[in-house]
Image 1: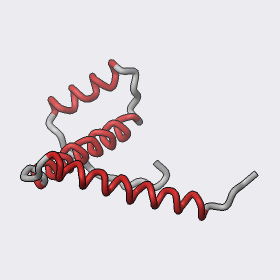
Image 2 (image 1 turned 90 degrees about the horizontal axis):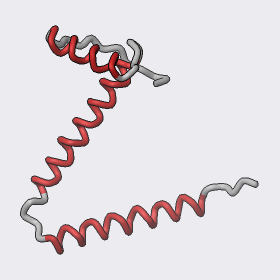
Image 3 (image 1 turned 135 degrees about the horizontal axis):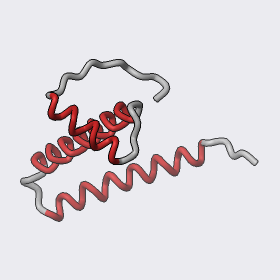
Image 4 (image 1 turned 60 degrees about the horizontal axis):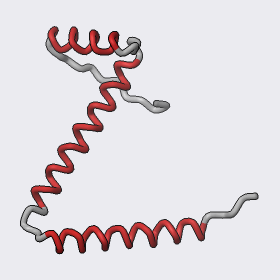
Length: 91
């Protein structure tokens, strides 16, 4: 974490004790608290984003959903190939 933002977070005493106990049991040090929180936040954002996408696509049939996935994969692959061709080759 080269560029970091300092935040003040308030949690209940029970949550604080549980978290510090967990970190200690897993050999983590005080500095690992920030890493733990960052991973937890990223996981929660991913979980909520996935739930929103599932809800948004709930009315699609499996075939429609697969067609959207196939289209997105094709676009990403084309972009990746174009980037690979544009990148200078080093020896």
